[in-house]
Length: 285
Image (cartoon, rainbow, N blue to C red; front, side, top):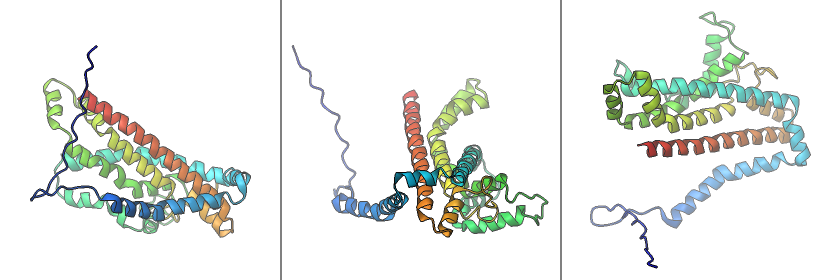
């Protein structure tokens, strides 16, 4: 029997600079510095809050996260955040499409405004929204202390996520495929659903996940306009602050851990779905 050996594909050579020097990775020192920084900034605080949440044991943790007001605040937070993420999926994709595919006066200003929620202190956003939709609303629309007010506030602070994820992908989309489909008689809707959306799906999912996880932990933008009504408009971050004010740090830490778990699971699932979608799109091509 003849054995056929298949040689593994050659690894592409590392890029080189002028003079023949190779560009390499950061090396052990760079990896160590990055790992140390992530440990100090991310892992240690997460470990500390998780440890604190179990100071009274598993029974104490379970009692804290199943208290009526805790469950109600988590439920309100998750539901409102889902609505906000869905709004961002639609409106963020539309805005990205307009910014990439259309030309209009003031386009640069609009593009810059997308990042305003990142720069503006979130409590300022809450104050502005309260002035606009509060008891003395100049447009006669009073939404403060309602769940629609929470949606508006969270939609404001999460606006950039889907837009900035979809925009660069949309720029790189091969428009010749769309033109070929149009020349073969495909409708705009068919081109959008069969060609454009599958290409953008991983970016849209990533942006939606980031918007959702930002929304479930948001505090500043809802603190004034939300009303903080237990069981109705009190979000988890406000409940956590309330527990700290009544000297119940274990309860506050327990609810914080639940939010962290929700955020981690959502991001993990969306990352898997996004990767599979990207692989499927690549295979179709």
